[in-house]
Image 1 (cartoon, rainbow, N blue to C red):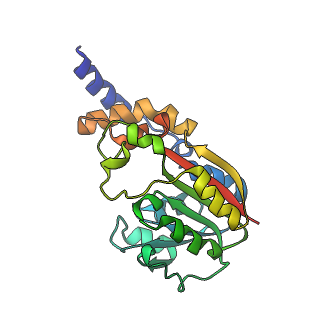
Image 2: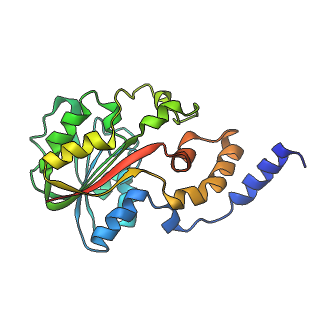
Image 3: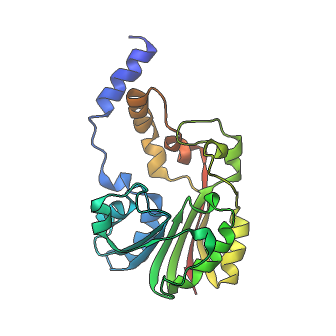
Length: 233
């Protein structure tokens, strides 16, 4: 059996392997669970496309989920909107957040949003007062190292995505949060051990299905993203 046939064969075998749900949970879910366990909480998900509402409610059934996005049509369907307690359709760059209640949310998530905004730092500042005192914030964005990575489908190099327009650093965003009375709980390069463990399985599945390894499969292995998890004091 040659190398290509072996990869196809192994991909077919691995496609039938059931991966435990807890291993598929997102890195930010694990941080939030440590803070809230099975207690109910109210979440604001900034940039809530790609079925994030349904996925979040699957892991946190007691969560009251609110989402923000530029359009209702961005990767959401009927099940997602049924999972939401509220949805805000808005252009974040306009900095008009008056329709979102202040000091209302226990958790705010901003995953891979800031790099798409020319004024992402101002957007972050404008949304900080939406969290309650004692609330938690998770931010994730491409690291500065990502500009050196090879190009891959669905983004591995920062410039693979033409809508990426600004880079940030942990130090820069930490300074903003410090001014907003936040305590940094964890920060740095995102290398989720669960995702790294699954990289060979997901890479072979991707190769079998698409003839290539999709960029996001390698994110944690290579350290594509940086993150901050903080508490409002």
